[in-house]
Structures are given as C-alpha cells and as structure tokens.
Amino acid sequence: MDEKTEDFAALFEASIKSKKRFTEGQTIEGTIVAIGPDVAFVDVGGKGEATIDVAELKDEDGDIEVAVGERIQAVVVSVAGGLQLSRRLARGAATNRQLEDAFRTGLPVEGRVEQEVKGGYEVRIARQRGFCPFSQIDVGRTEPAQHLGKVYAFRIVEYKDGGRNLVVSRRVLLEEDQRARAEEVRRAIVPGAVLEGRVASVREFGAFVDLGAGVQGLLHVSELGWSRVNSVGEVLKQGDEITVKVLRVDDGEKDKPKIALGMKQLAEDPWLLVAQKYEVGQVKAGRVTRVAEFGAFVELEPGIEALAHASTFAPAGRADDWKRHVKPGTTGAFEIVAIDVDKRRIGVAPVPEGSSRAASIMEPDAPPRGEDAQAHQFGTLADKLRGVLKRQE
Image 1 (cartoon, rainbow, N blue to C red):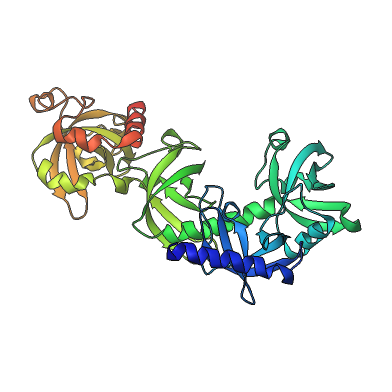
Image 2: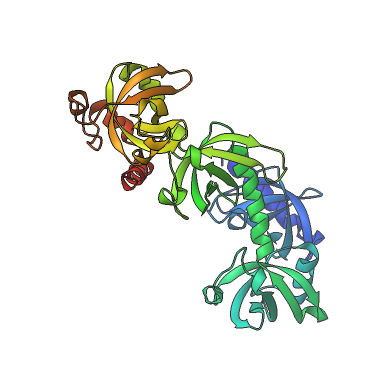
C-alpha cells in the first residue's frame, strides 16, 4: 500500500468514527483536506472527517471549483457507514426539516419545474410544492416552455407553514455564480491581453462586447479597423464571435470597470510601411472618403488616408464650387506632394483625368498584389471592411 492510499484509508476511518457527533439534516462547515477521483474528504473538527462526492464540487463545465484548504458549507445527509455530506439537497431525499435548514443556511435544493402557473412556475421539491416567480427562473427573459420538466438547483427564499408554502429562486444562484466567474474574467482583463468575446449590442459609436460572465467592454468604431468605418452595423452584428485586444482598463467603478477594446491592433499598422511604399512625386490611385471645407480626404489603401487641399483642385467659379465635383466615393489619380510619417500625414494633389500620368497607374478597384495583398488579409473583419468601402462607391 503506497503512502497516498494509506492517507485516504486513514481519512475514511476517521469519517466513520466521526458519525456519532452529527445528525442527518445538520448543516456544518469544514475544510477540504483531500480530493480523490470520486470523493473528497472534509475536516469537520475534533479529528473527524466527512466525505462528499467530487461531483458536487464541480461547476457546469465539469471543473472542480474548490481546492484543498478551502472551507465549504454542507448538510449531513447520512451517518451510516461514515459521515456523508452534500452541498445540495436532492429533490427526492429532502425532509421538511432539511428544507427548513436549507432555507436558514441558503443551501441550494434540487427541484423539478412541473408546470406554469399564474405569475410563475410550480416546482416540486421533495414531497413539497414550491413557487418560482417568472423573474426568478433565469437571469434574463426566457420562454416559459423551455423550463418545463427541467431539474434545477434553487434557493428557498421564503419558508412558511412548516414547508407547505415555499418560494424559491434559481436566479439568485445563477447571479452568484456569474459574479464569481466575472471576478475570474476581470483578473484576465489587463491592457495588452487578447481575448475572445461576443458582440452583445451594436450602437452608432461602437459595439459592446461580452468577454464572459457578463463583463463587457466597448469596441469603439474608430478601433474596428485601420480603414474608416461609417456604420458599425455594416461590419458587426449582435452575436458575432470576435477576437479583441484590451487597450485600457479604468477601475473607477469597483464592480464595473470601463474596458476599452480594439480590433485593428491585431492587424499590422499600414503606416509602418508608408516610408517604404510612398515617396513624393509618385502618382497613386485613390478614393475620396469625405469632403471638408479645407479639402478632401483620399484613401490610398485601407488605413492610409491623405489630404488633397482645396487649393489643389481646379478652380470652378466660387471658392467652394470644387466640392460640387468631388463627392465621397469619387476615384482618381493623385500625386504625392508631402509625407510626414511621424504625424501620419500625406498631402496629395489630383492629377488631371485623361493625362498620361493618370493612365499609367493601376485601376483603383484592381485587387492588391504581393505584400499589399497580405496586408489586406485579416479574417472576416477585413473582408467586411472592404465590402463597406465597395458599397460606398
């Protein structure tokens, strides 16, 4: 017999000797001292140990949620052949005394949702019928039919008339679990972390992304991609599974820190290659993305915008008449007249249509080649961004 087997044998012997000090239905606290494949041993004081099924120590994903040295609260369900504990009263084995004890201690009880009644559900718990309001069956709005016949863990929130009047809640247990998981999620949310998330809602200014357990961050429209995005809804929709990078975490509010997220940071910044790809005097194809009083912004490639000053356009009567001929979506040839990589600025001037210099460049809508093609490839988001730009033409 090896040392580990001897330790478990000693613990089991202690659990048998400890049964005289406790009674069934009693709620006790103890410390986890060992966790085996099927059972765990709990130190209940006075050199006594009890056992509890390992299955009761696992979360919904099947992972053990406690460790050796942690304290737990449980109910004595048997003293025959050793002290056996349970963290949850099985729906067919709970007595009225145990139900009252579970009410006082907050111990979860198992119940079966029998039928829909006025204002909620009838829940069968042991030999008793309980009532669960609609608002307490889940954390959000759900269809009543999806819960019928299901066996859930509930907490007794009201106990009257010797157990004949029970009000139970599943929601409080779900919220407690969500808060515990949210704390774990928040520990992983640090600047620079790359996380998986789900789009919870889409707004004009960006999208809220659920990072797990209800913890949400804001993905601002300006952080979606290196290309300008006019409408978040054309790129993302509710329920999309996406990968994001944590940009900032503001711990101003204790339980709800403000989390800023980004997606474009997961792709290479196109400005890093500007010095290699662009030089003054070159003629490039471009697309006008927006027009201002002082000039027009021209996209030379996704993420690289240049400014064509109003003075570079051919005069057409009044000072601002040039804008009548230059609309967002207009494509043409533009000459590079200035580059400032540090300030991320490129100045361009339109090349007269039909000139040999304009005809010599690649068509604006021609697909990129070589390194340019690789720079354009970034999963589904890049495809969507290019689709948005196509539709703006």
